[in-house]
Amino acid sequence: MVKVAPSILSADFARLGDEVRKVEEAGADWVHVDVMDGLFVPNITIGPDVIKALRPHANIPFDVHLMIERPERYIDRFADSGADFITVHVESTHDIPRALKEIRHQGKRPGISLNPETPFAMVEPFLPDVDLLLIMTVQPGFGGQSFKPEVLPKIVRASDIRKETGARFEIEIDGGVNRDTGKKCAEAGATVLAAGSAIFKARDIRAEIALWHGY
Image (cartoon, rainbow, N blue to C red; front, side):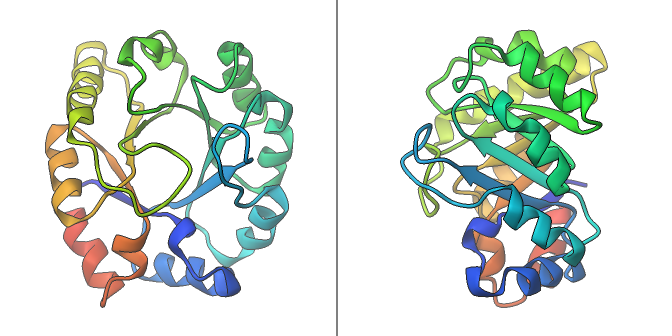
């Protein structure tokens, strides 16, 4: 069963606590939190204080995706905020091993992410050290973009590595995920689907999540 991680980037920001509670009650597995700093990506979203405020509203894991420059500077703060998974971009720092080690040291589950144009080989050396591989299927920074199907071979490659090595890292897909693209990603080997508007704008969120669980 594929996991579903609604992205609060598409939630009602005036009611974030209620929105997080709503998707958990509807059957979501994780809550996906996109953190942007206006430097690594041309947008600014939320920081650790908001995550800390949201943490009492849900019991499911918080999947915190750091789209920020030099994320190693802030790992302790995001760990303290209540994040469960903390994912850093391979393009965002020159010291990925240090960042991943610090996430693990803080008692959290480390993840590595790559942009659509980044070769898969850039993240491959770090896969033994992570619990999550986040594959971007749009250019990070804004919601509502169209899924890039040329990224599908990366999902297949990641799934093959899991099978070949016995690794247990999750393969999460983020960007332009809907019923159609989510099914394609699951068929390619994805284990987690992060989606914003496709979940939060669904007529029946519980039914939508249940449908995706069947992929």
